[in-house]
Amino acid sequence: MTQKTALITGVTGQDGAYLAELLLDKGYLVHGVKRRSSSFNTGRIDHLYQDSHEAGVRFFLHYGDMTDATNLIRLVAQTRPDEVYNLAAQSHVQVSFETAEYTANADGLGPLRLLEAIRLLGMEKRTRFYQASTSELYGATPIVPQNETTPFYPRSPYGAAKLYAYWITVNYREAYGMHASNGILFNHESPIRGETFVTRKVTRAVAAIARGKQERLYIGNLDAKRDWGHARDYVEGMWRILQQPQPDDYVLATGESHSVREMIELAFAEIGRPIEWRGRGAEETGLDAKTGEPLVLIDPRYFRPTEVDHLLGDASKARKKLGWRHRIAFKDLVREMVASDLAALDNGEASPHNASGDSPANAAAVMPKTA
Ligand code: NDP
Ligand code: GDR
Image (cartoon, rainbow, N blue to C red; front, side):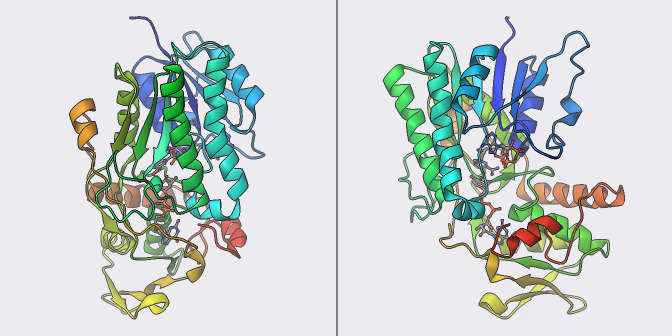
């Protein structure tokens, strides 16, 4: 079998790191696109780094950006990938309300630039394309659960940008016969999840509270429900989507949803501090059930201008056609994340915490509301 070459945008992110690991394990040659940053941003993939002076190197990093068309054309021309996984995006929903135009550029036009690069180079018949689509496309749909035929109703600049990306992927498939597919992935988390997404924010805070480094957690909407899986399972699904003879769109989800409130309860239970809720709305407080100490407080700055209330995915198509299903249960995911954040603190590896449970710099930026 000839060796396959993959190009991954967003390789420094959560999914990029797991996917690079998976493809390297499968024998691929992997090219990853990273952004220039004034500080190190390769922490999630440093363990995959191979010294280019050694023989048999299969993992390469290139500078790039989804807003730079010439850069993307050059990267596709140089690497001539069999498979492109477009994972790069400004992926934070709340941040997209503050950086709406940039989010549209990177998340909406970015995929178009990449598809055009493949086409302009005459590679549309040999290069397969995966677009990281999202359950945020469903947004305010009243239909539960959501599958591939559920109408979209995005509720944020992020969701609207990803809607364009979804349809341009479908269009390039239909117009040019490209093997271009959307994975409509519901939330997936892991110990390397970005620190300002709610699950990781909670598990980092819980670990810091357990070790006496933080007093309480400030949080937004407790009642939002999400279908949370483990990123390791989901990157396997991305790969399976591109191995199909025909391109198509697939939902990947667990089929189980939980509220932010339940997720917080589970995480605190991991450190033996069960939570009891008191009050309502913005006054609601999560108390330590044993001591009455307030551990969880609401900060309305984390409320979103328009919220997505309930996401629950139906992945029966992926189960049937891809033979994919999630393996890691929600409870085990939360347990793994709390354990990992505790270990990071104990080993002195954790980034600093403060009272709000954000990194100090992010909390400063929060004065509006980001995290
Ligand atoms: P992350 O935020 O962890 O990673 C995003 C990646 O994109 C990072 O490598 C980031 O670089 C890179 N990036 C951001 N902007 C640009 C840009 N302008 N040009 C090039 N690279 C850029 O996201 P996830 O790994 O969680 O998600 C991967 C993809 O899947 C995203 O597109 C996301 O929107 C989508 N998705 C995620 C879901 C989830 O639950 N995780 C669910 C459904 C879809 P840097 O490290 O420098 O910031
Ligand atoms: P989401 O993930 O918006 O679903 O997007 P996030 O973890 O940010 O929010 C989930 C829900 O939790 C509520 N929430 C809070 N969220 C954050 N970040 N911080 C808080 O303090 C907080 N309090 C309550 C939110 O309001 C929301 O309802 C993620 C991203 O990975 C997207 O890129 C991806 O497309 C979707 O998942 C599927």
